Structures are given as structure tokens and as C-alpha cells.
Amino acid sequence: MRLLATLASVCLALPGIALAADSPAGRCADLYRLSDMDNAVEAGVLVLASDAAPAHCRVRGTIDATIRFEVRMPVEGWTGRFMFHAPGGLAGVIGDTSSLLGDGFAMATTDTGHEAANEPTFYRDDHAKLNFAFRANHLTTVLAKRIVAAFYGQPVQYAYLWGCSNGGRAALVEALRYPDDYDGIIAGAPAIEYSQLLVWAYETSRHQRRGPLAAESVALLDANTRRACDLLDGVADGIVGDPRKCTVEMLELGALACQDGPAPDCLTAAQIETARYIYTGVTDDSGAVVVPGVYPGGELGGDFELWVTGPVPFLEGTASDITVDVIEAVMHREPDFDVASFDPVSDLPRLREVMYSVEVPTPDFSAFEESGGKLIIYNGWHDQPCRAKTLEGFLADAEELNGADALDEYLRTYMVPGMVHCAAGPGAWAADFIQPIVDWVENDVAPDRIIAEHPGDFTFMEAQTAITARVVNWSDAILEAGKAQQDAMRFTRPLCPYPQYAQYNGSGDTDDAENYACVED
Image (cartoon, rainbow, N blue to C red; front, side):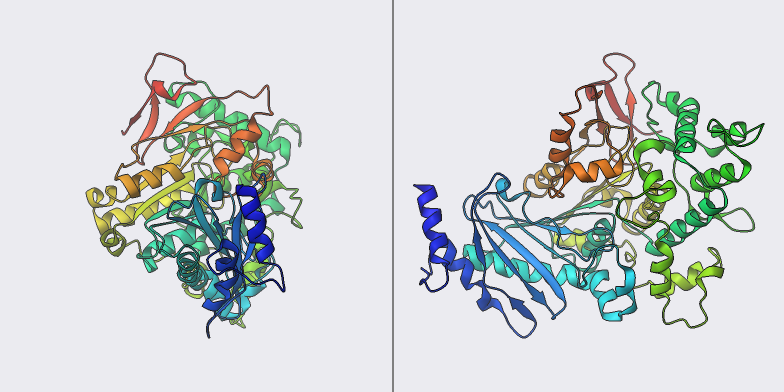
């Protein structure tokens, strides 16, 4: 009977057939009536149930004639919840609006006001840059809530947002610029200090040209980190449990130097310099760190492949190589700017000034706290573009501005050992952050620790392929994909609220999260 009713609703949506206004198809098609001078809302389309999603209403349109958006709403089983996907990378594509429909969420996303993924030329348009920076996500949120309320006849009860990388940056921007937009926010690997990220990537590309690391070089660095730091947490598992204790000096990179010319099992002096840069970061003439490096560990997790060595199937060169195009586009109004002579120390303030609108604001969360919002941040300890040390600096500023005790009431951060950028790595990184934020918002149950699982051996790009369109509930997707890896070792670990870390209790199965405690030195 339910199938017949759904088919009847679809038939009502066909051209030339009158719509019953109180039917799902009628309500969906009538959503175009929300169009106004600023918003162009298309007539909604009722989509039949499939293996991927239940029957739902899909609505598309544009805001401000430039910002494309998409909203999807399940016909049955709506829980009053709304999930927004803030897209990552350079955006330019419509994100995930379907993976949580079966769980009773309405979903929405936007391309942030420009088209084409990995295409930085939109930075040459000030309007497009501001849309990307903060306008598109906010404006889409406001309109999407109106659409959801019109379809169901009642407003959204709980609004949530998830994003990683640039999406994580956008998530923090929402909390700080528009604290009333969302009840719960999940910011994964947030691109804090975007200008710093650009400098980091550009300098990585420069070092790689001078002293190119190859795949075997990365494997050598991975083995070297495990030799130096694996046992710091008392467990020989190939994971650096608390990378803050693994210093560059402990790596003894000089000991990897080739003695009889270049070879796969050693590093040349130029390669050692590249490796040292990656771990240390950009320094000024006094040796002070201006842009922090990457914590050692997880070298074979895929970030080196994407950002340093290549090849990258969807890019010409590496992700770091295309940074030159981004910087040139960002600085297009500076006629005397020459990217070839870009100085990462002296030119960084100049770049920051131009990128100010894109950056995450000063972390004063007082308005977000007053709104009753909750925020979960997670970050791989070994993330290259969105480095953990940068996030640590942001959190220190937030603590100073808001107070540690107050901050703990609405913000929890989880640094993930053995995880690289957004996903993948040798650690236990597949974790569900959605249920914890729901429990925190709706039941006032703060997430003291979150259990994560190592789902199988996935590099960053392999993980992206396995996740496919299920971006927001990626942990479920990657755990399912991992079941196909019959020989992969699986284990669990607790993710602890920063600055705590997971420490083995000294007895019991080291692969079981129950035998670890969250501690702080």
C-alpha cells in the first residue's frame, strides 16, 4: 500500500496532471512559491525510494543568482532534524544531501557560489570570494530551513552542520559569524588560518622540486618514525599515540643520509631538508616557527602522496602544486606581486590581509554559547594541509578568550592518532561524530570519549573512493568498505577530549578501546 501511495504521488507530479496540494508531491512541487527577489526556488521533484535513499522531495535553485543549492527531505520518518553539508576543497560542486535521509534528517548543501571543483579562478571575483568565505553557507541555511518548514508544515527542531577541511573552516565560521544558525556543529580538520595553509603548500611544492621525495622515501620516513616514537605510548602498534612527544630531534633524520650516492633505502641531503621542512615548518631567520609543520606519524596514510609526491589522479601535479594558481588568483589586485619571488615569511602578512574575509574569525564563542550551541572539532594528528599545531594555537586563543571551564561546556576537540587529512591512516580513525553531537544537543550528554575503529588499510584517496557519495556519514561507509579487506587488522581506540590522550592501562587486549584511559600530562 505504501508503494502504491508513493507511486500515486509521483504520478500527480507529472506535467499536465493536477496536484493534490496536501500530498507529498503537491507540497514538493509547490515549493517554487518560496521564490522572491533574492531566491529562485525550482519546483520540487518527488524522488522514488531506492537502495541509496528513501522516497524524498528534492529541491534545487539559486540564491543571489550565483549560489546553487540543493535540499532533500524524506517523505516519511522526518525527525525534525536538519543536516547541512559544508563542502570541502575549493567547493564548486553540490555536496551530500542524501546519506542521512534514511535516519530521518532533511539535508541541504551548496556549491558556495561558483562552479568547477579544484578551480581557483573564482578568487578573482570579489563577490564569489565572499560567497565562498561565508555568505553562501549562511544564506543557503536560512532558505533551506524555510523550504523544510514549508514542506512539513512545521519548523526545523534541531539544526546540524558537518564539514571537513574547507568545510571545517566554514563550520567554525558559522559558529562565530552566525551563532543562531545551528544547534550542533561538527568541524572536521578545519582549515584555520587559510593563508598559512597556502604558504605551507606552496613551500612544500618548492622543497619537493629541490629535494624530491619519492614513494620509497616516504616509506623510509614512516619506518623511521615508528622506530623513534611508536613505543612512546607503551604499545607497539605502528601508531604514535601522542605525537606531541615525538620531536624532530628524536627522528634523527641525519642518520638516513645516503653514504654512497642516491638509493631507495636512504635520503640525499636535499631530501632530508624536504623531510625536515615538512616536520618543522616555515621558520624565520632567527629559527622561530612562522608556519608550523606536521607531527611525525602516518606517513603512509596518503597525505604525502596527495600533497608531496603524487601522482594524483584528478590533478596535474600535487595538491600543493596548484597552490601557486590559488595565490596568484588571490593576489590578482596586487600588480607588483610576483608569485615566483614569494617569500613565505615577509609576504605572509600581505597574503593574510587579502584573505581576511575567508579566514576563521577570532575565536570568541560567547554568542555561540549564549545561543545554546554545541561544537565538536576533530583533526588527524598527522594532517598535512590542516596541521594539528595550527588548531592547537586556535584552541589556546579560544581558551584565553572564553575560559577553559566555559569552553568545555559547549566545545570538545578530538585529535585522532594515526589519521591524516579528514580520513585514512594507520590509526583508529573511523568514528561517528553525528550521534555524539545529537546526544549533546538534544539530551545534554557531553561526549567524554568517542570510540573509533581502524576500518582497514585505506590511504586518503582510497578512503574518498570508498566513501563515494556518503560524505556526511562517512564512518558508516568506510566501515562497510573495510569489511571487504579480509586480512586487514582491526582495532578500536578511544578518542579523548583534547588535551587528553589515550593511554594503555597496561593489561588486556591492546586492540580493545576498553583497555585505554583518557589522561592528561
